[in-house]
Length: 377
Ligand code: SAH
Ligand code: SF4
Image (cartoon, rainbow, N blue to C red; front, side, top):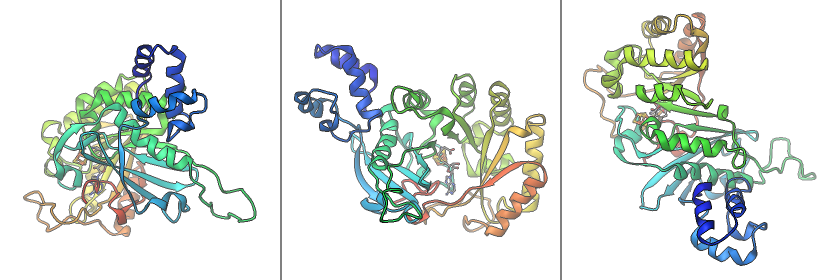
């Protein structure tokens, strides 16, 4: 897609009235056309020039996993769909759709090609950093899934072949900035993408349906606290002390817990919004009773009067295959997810301490589309 501003410039150059720019913009972001011949509100003889000069997307679909037809299967049969996109400069990025049911479709978008943060447990981190994605490239990942969903004729549970009920197009209902890359190291483009996706005259998705996840870039958190947007914030915490967190996430050396958590507290104070703490559980590393108690104490120390705004999401570690060298000094041989029972125990302990907690359901492992697996194949 192109921004409304750049389309206005284009229309001016072509001597077209200004309102045409908005029609072109809305054809892509609101009507979700996949070809200019579908834009019936525009003169037919423009289609050719639009096809040539205004590409519908900045990205090319390279591969859809598990397969092209997955989108037309019921969400229960194909709950995760991954697209590998090719950029104009021949780079590959990945985007994931998670279908919770017909009414909730979450797109997990990438914000960078690769990532510089080098977290020990993450496949994207192994790729290193190549470049930031533009706001248009971020938006186009969402629009591609929106077009696919818009064209679906999937059967919902209880569907009867004798009626049309249940054959309905679906929509993107949520966006999480949790794909490849660190959103707060591509701050301006991510915020611009959020504004485009929120535009009432365009895609029109509410801020509250979007979530940015950061590994803990303090200046980004502070800046975000002053934005006039109500997008949710998630912090990838994963450890309750600096020693372990620095081993798992090198970013902790620059922004240790005593810098990170006060910044989060300030964000809460300014916005009065809940913050989601993503917490990967690794067997034998951070899943013991003592570790959980340390986590409780950490939260109570930094958020004494803000505990109602703390929400912890527990995630079992998703395997990223071989090639994940473990940080030194961990005294274990490999990263593994604890059992369901252990994860439940951690959740219970947090809950007993009046901390809001959710065990995050594991999506997409079979097509390497789960958290941390993007870019692994
Ligand atoms: N860079 C940002 C957002 C993208 S990562 C961040 O780190 O927050 C999205 C989430 O997936 C983060 O919470 C990240 O820590 C988590 N993640 C990475 N690798 C994972 C793995 N192997 N298993 C489970 N979660 C993982
Ligand atoms: Fe980057 Fe997030 Fe992966 Fe860390 S977890 S390497 S910050 S994408």
